[in-house]
Image (cartoon, rainbow, N blue to C red; front, side, top):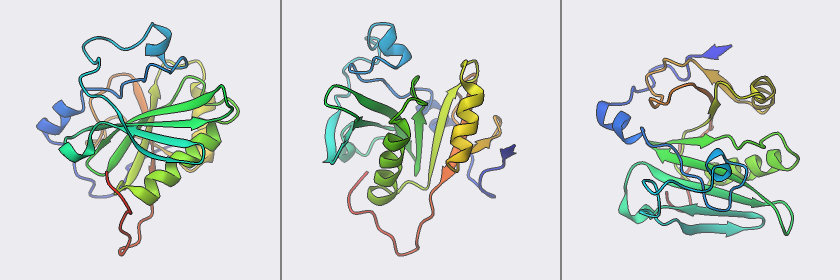
Length: 190
């Protein structure tokens, strides 16, 4: 079932659509990402925006392009340590109170639910994000399993022509709206 998302959700402008033509970049440590499997980042995306550690607590480390530049979109990487040798990586773009997360290729592996939960807790407690949108390619072999798993966790499919979505082709988006108290202020940026 697809949802209309939120009634009255603002459509993205032409400028915002242009900004969101970029996809989240994968970090060099990611072997599970398609880019990592193909041998690293493209030089076009390259190292023009070095990621800096923004937060580290427990098993979660958050990296971001410099949030002090107040640029949109902001690249956010969430690295969750599963064992001393392995970690789960979630890559996203923060834009206009929305976080777009690419679903890793091994998202259904053990530990990924724990890493997503830690990521969502960080986003809810430390940012001004109103909704988290996960996305994955429409032609993935595990598409049905991803839809079931993320629906179980509270995500809902967003119709592909929704005006607040970026212009990414052949992608399924699922939204998780964050409940915000009117008096809630995040304890740190972005």
